[in-house]
Image 1 (cartoon, rainbow, N blue to C red):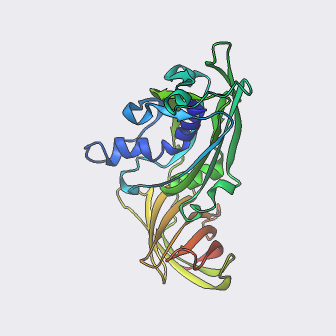
Image 2: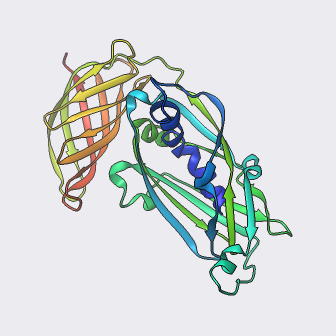
Length: 304
């Protein structure tokens, strides 16, 4: 139902919406890192949300923010969904009455929610992503109020954190409510952990073979040049023969996004412990949409 829709959704979307407010939006200057338990007041955007019994509600969101104001990278995002029940007001049957139709009977005492996370280039297919969380079951009490959530907590996987640290990603939310209702979401709490690993030195020139799958498969050799900010090496950029990219470095993992006027690409570069080889997995999409898209895989060697 709406609680879980927005709660679990904000576990992962908080890395953009909330960090945007604290870092880039909200009129502040510079970057402000988040760490620990965070409570966010939702405001008017969480008011008067209608739900219809047994009808699957789904929506896809895209998120993109300025990595220099990100405040990350982060290693963990989690939420106690049970505790977040206190942050909602749930009014049964209001949606049906407002629509001038007869309310459906209570079909079940449990609603469900699913959350899918993917790279920005996966916007059109993110609802089939393998990064899926749920179903989360929300049980109603005798007064048709949400009383419990199972599982009670949500924890982002390492793969999801790589996507979030890119700074550009897609989220699909699916919700099924057991009753007609109108929901106000007042606040949401989550826990976020800063990366506690110092950024490795990944700067230099890397080259090696790559291959791409999808609608326009190809294979060739690529050379990319990575530069890290001397004042903050957790921020890095790189160039190849096609475009420019930027992202964040946590330990030996570099999550990036970028592109040109004709394409976009995002993914994760992982350097081996010896610092001489690396792998890069990414997703690309050419413009206009519907031309070429798919995953790419690079095996790289440091030459400079």
